[in-house]
Length: 441
Image: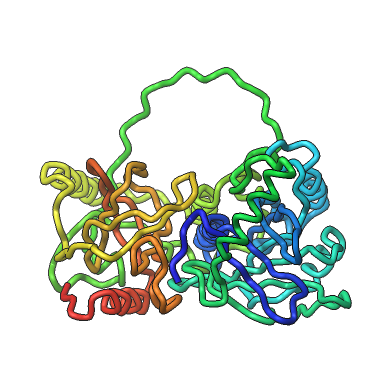
């Protein structure tokens, strides 16, 4: 099944008294937020959630927009709401009365992610569902991201008698690319929905990256800009040593890439995200940096004799970094092939879009884009076979890989794959062989 970003997806089963429609862009954007939050911290990241808004018509729930809910995470990385979080949720549910973009829309339910358990509604989820979403037309969407795999999800709903099955969804589906359980809304039905919205004078809607639910911040005078001191170069190590902890048999040597596996696997007893120096509205990537800094062990002072060797080591690093700058960013550490037939997705602050892949290797990829992240930025890159629309084989046609921006050039940027384990690399190579069975890299 191929999807168009302007089309809506339909989910329906006989047990559900209504069918649910949702824009393909909305589902893809929520999946991007969930995936980035999954990689935002060690051991599954932080869970996220939000509220659906839309209209009901003709036995259908039409989700038109969503708004994320900012969570304090006072009870750990799970999506468990504190008293302040619930007060913020109440304000979020009242947004249609104050937000012009949500005017005349109703609350159709909520979504949240499970990062350390399967797709079901826990006791806390049920309590939240019954307290804030008691209506018969209000649904719950639970998403389950996985490392190097497509995100799975399932809808929960109340049937005609008001009963709710919470231990598991009646039907799971793949979020992106959409699985076969999600069908395209018929053109006639989509035209009828657009006419209904126009007749009711519903304002333009869609998307969920809105700051209306965030607390207003007082304006502060802009600080005087001062030149920042030059940052020291990253340490140098062979690529294979970075990826697996051993020296590469090819003998190649490149700037070391920090991997999530380098983060301490024995974090201190859980404390709140705020105690780690994170703000409530901090994006997931910043949360990851704060968590990593909080967990990093302090380096003891070296004796005088060892400091001399340390200075030599630092000098070598500077020389190698200077060598890389002189040679330029076009050096290749692996054979590359044209990326015809592949599409890349990543979040750039707007709705996720398909980007062409200029070339790809077993170690990195060059993605064509007008928006370029700075060198050193860590992102989650989703590669998909079949161009803009998902191919017919479901999750086997897509793979999500943590990556780091290592260079930028006119028309795009180069990224280095960050494989945590050898099995991750094997999964990626199998993906490439599904794309081109006769590929040799």
